[in-house]
Length: 238
Image 1 (tube, one colour):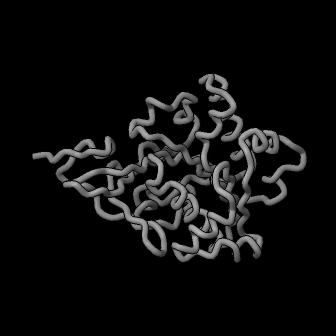
Image 2 (image 1 turned 90 degrees about the vertical axis):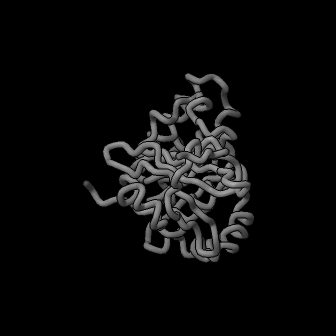
Image 3 (image 1 turned 45 degrees about the vertical axis):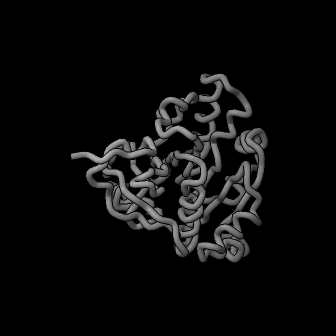
């Protein structure tokens, strides 16, 4: 197996058997507010500290808001951007797609090794047709791979079963899928993470707890004696 691209999140890299496959496209899917943006920022931040240029493409948050959120976790993104190790770009889905194929495009200019797109759900502004949406997703995935990047595509849904809302069938185009969700256990809201797919490699099958604290994401132990975790309301087993 070729050396994996580590996220820098110890427990998650363990679940991914080392990290992401180099030059792969990877989907992070989950409910609003469950930690997808934080995971993407940490992926870029940890990479930048190790010398891997990172590019953040946002369709919903201005860079100054990302600076603020990252600072709350103890990450100085602005300094990394000034050192040309990181770039945060705010744009629209249409402009981003046009730029991907332009002669003077952001990927070729900045030459990132890691890219995060937040969020691919916004491509539904372009079309609701499943076949056209699949072509949009294919264009994005193929272009990011041609650029030699390892990318994280963030997708948002209020439903735990993303297959019911995956109209563009991006699940068939990406190399791995990470699901994040809230779960209620004994009247307490906790966060859960699962790796649903990793092409060409084994991965952990269990669902684990995770927390977001100063310093970033901490993946904890797996849920025991519970089922229906990803539905959001678990049940005790046994």
